[in-house]
Length: 306
Image: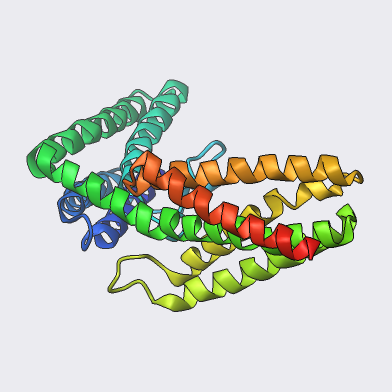
C-alpha cells in the first residue's frame, strides 16, 4: 500500500511535468497529460484513505528503487529533446509496468484482502490506459494530432537535420581542396591524411561554435544552441574524415581512387538528405551538390599539381 501511494504520487508528478513541457508546442497533448495527472492524484488520495483506515496515519517511505525489479522512472530532463511520440510511448509504458508489477505482487500475496487490493490496483492501471485513450480521442483529434506530428517533424528538421546537413556539406566539400592539394603536391598519403585530419577537426570546431552562436533558437524555433552546435560540429568532422581515412593506405594511387569513391558517396548522401527532408527536387539536389564538389575537388588537384 505504501509503495502504491508513492507510485501514484510519482506518476502524477511525471504527467504534470509532461503537461508543462508540452504546453507551448503541443497544447492538446498537454491537456491529455493534465487530465491523467489529475486522475493519478485522485487514485493517490483514495489509496491514502485506505491505508489510514487499515494501518494508521504513518505511511513509510517505500520507493520503486527500493524494490527488486521495481520500475525506475526517468526524469523528464533525461529525455531532452522531448519528441511527442517518445512521451506518448513513455506514458503507455508507465501504465503497463505498473499493472504488471501489481499483478506479480498479487500472485505472491497470501492474504486474501491484500490480494484483492493488488488485483484492483492492476485493473485500475489497465483502466488508466483506456482512460488515456478516451481522453486522446476527445482532446487529440486526428487533425490536431496531424498538426502536432507535422510540428514535430518541422522541429526535427530545424534542430537536427538542418545543422547536420550544413556540417556535412561543409566537412565534405570544404576539406576536399586541402586534402587533395596536399595529396597531389607531396604524393605522400600520410601527409594528405594529416592535412585532412587537421582540416576536418578544425572545421568541426569552427562550424560547431558558429552554429551554436548563430541564435538562441527561441524566435527561430531551432532548438537549443548546444544541441545544434554539437550536431553541426560532429557532422562536419564526419564529412571531412570520410575521404581522409583512405589516405591511411600507403599506396598513393589506390588511396586517391578510394578517396574519390568516398567523395561520391558523401555527395550522394547530401543530395539524398536534401531530397528527403528539404523537399529539394532530386535532379536539382544532385546537380548542385555534384557541381560544387567537383569545383572544389578540381581546385585542390590543380593547386596540388602547380
